[in-house]
Length: 196
Image 1 (spheres, rainbow, N blue to C red):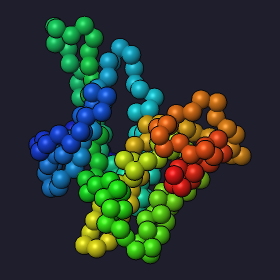
Image 2 (cartoon, one colour):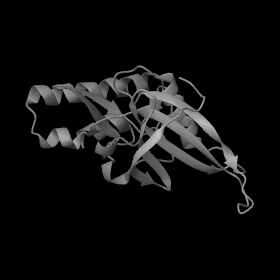
Image 3 (cartoon, rainbow, N blue to C red):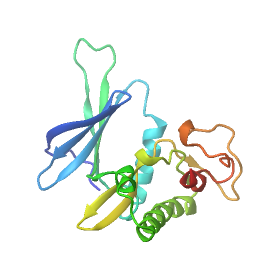
């Protein structure tokens, strides 16, 4: 992974979440996704962003976790109209083809569903073996890439992770998307979420 800036052309805005845009971009030789984190330099880094970067960098190459290409920090905007400098952290990742919902709508056969679940569990097992609980596993955070008739399932969005030691003890403060929280949350958050 490189930390130097790269030339890119924005093709389109994919979505925006919490005033942070996610773009489809063209780099020198491929199409990527670029997520831009804006923050006030005087307040420091967001801990969720640092945790997400840790996961993306440490698990590069895992077939079921989002692949990061590079990260860089743009110089703070020090225009006279701004009271505090805004810095942008740009994260370039692989482009995926869609959310897992699109595959489920196709009504796949049981063999294919088993393969999807196996890939999700492969990503989760890797995280759990390293003391990481995702906390926000939901269809919007499980994407896929398609290569002919083969589908590669990828887990994304690691900014709500918890770092735990085993044996696991229930966390006092829960960070998750409430709608997808399973009743058995206190013991095995990510595995329980798959059953929801």
